Image (cartoon, rainbow, N blue to C red):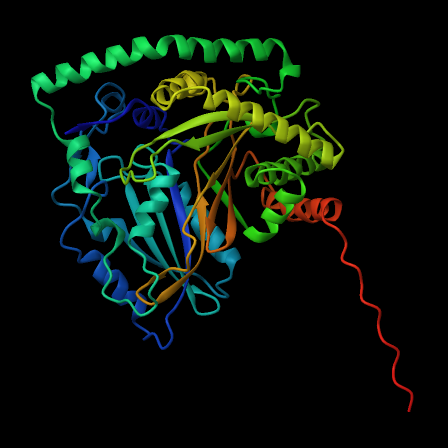
Amino acid sequence: MKRLGTLDAAWLAVESEDTPMHVGTLQIFTLPPHAPETFLRDLVLRMRECDEVARPWCHKLAHPSALGRLIAPRWKIDARIDLEYHVRHSALPAPGSERELGILVSRLHSNPLDLSRPLWECHIVEGLEHNRFALYTKMHHSMIDGVSGVRLMQRVLSTDPEATGMTPPWAVHVDKTRADKTDGEASVPAALSQAMDALKLQADMAPKLWKAMSRLVQSACHPEDSLSTPFAGPVSPLNRRVTGQRRLATQHYELSRLRELAKAGQASLNDIVLYLCGTALRRFLLDQHNLPATAMTAGIPVNIRPADDEGTGTQISFMIASLGTDEDDPLKRLQQIKTSTRRAKEHLQALPRTALTQYTMLLMSPYILQLLSGMGGRMRPVFNVTISNIPGPHQTLYYEGAQLEAMYPVSLIAHGGALNITCLSYAGALNFGFTGCRDTLPSMQRLAVYTGEALGELEALLLPTPTQEPVPAPALP
């Protein structure tokens, strides 16, 4: 058995009927040229006939009850995993547009995972217009974070459009040496040595963590410092109780377009993403006459996984930044976001990597405690909305000759945070996934449209208008 890390166990502890803690990825493929009519049926059969299921796909909870998840969160191997249950085949009703796909994925994402089985499902969806199909995969957040999830799915894909006979994602093994180091049961001397090392590390990190937390308290007392802190954001319609039904909206932008804006605005790509989200939220709430008078804040996961780490589980830190929703002027709003993210990065970078996990748990403990105590959505939020940006593959990828057109993240929400916006880059594009509570945030799809309008508005302000070439006079007869 393998014991879960503290943050991974926290996702299991807050699991409930209204707040299932799984995340997903929606991949859209074009069928290969001259694909037979049975292409997808044969694909599903091959996926189900896989002889061996690798970690973490074969992990299931040793104690799936609510009490067991809380006091003894451990993984064990499922030696007889039922792939016919986990791998499912669906079809869209006509006309098979993105609308029908969005409705189906929203419904699939609303269903909790069976906690007595390995915590994942894979859905192959046929009938998407223009000769396409979709692959929707969901896994519990205790098993995986955004970065490791993308890496898991990427390992099975190929840059070769002619490659066939490829394995499904759950048959691909991670680095065995690394896995053995993390999964093996330690001997008693090794366990004692690790415990002593951990105590020493805690003692060494305590002054740095105290300084970082004191800095947050100081900033909370002095908002002009521009370092956003927990509970600095206002109460908004996004921060109510949620129900179990989800809604998904997507948006797609070329990365070159966003990078040009970032260069013109002397901002980072993440600053532009936050600007688009903040501006869309401002308009969305203005439409409802519900815009708070103070700036809303975003909780931003930060990847702390080493580049060569192919393991799974959650390895993130967190920072909080202003979205400038109280600022009417677009350029001043962008400047407010830039200043806030710079302060947040400086604060996080002042900590050594070895202290980031402890810092993250301290920073996120009010959020976790709100959910565990049932106070989420009933008191001031730790932050207003989660916004993350996950780097994905740069090259065009294929599976069994089918070209991957786009990848969209489908994330989780919880009480007090009815909206999650996650971005995933792929092959020169940035794909936005808006996951929201169907009942708490009606008309949530408008947010996706409003990000496009915010992008056009910022381009008009920052980018020079191309000079128009004079039209030559027609030649005389």
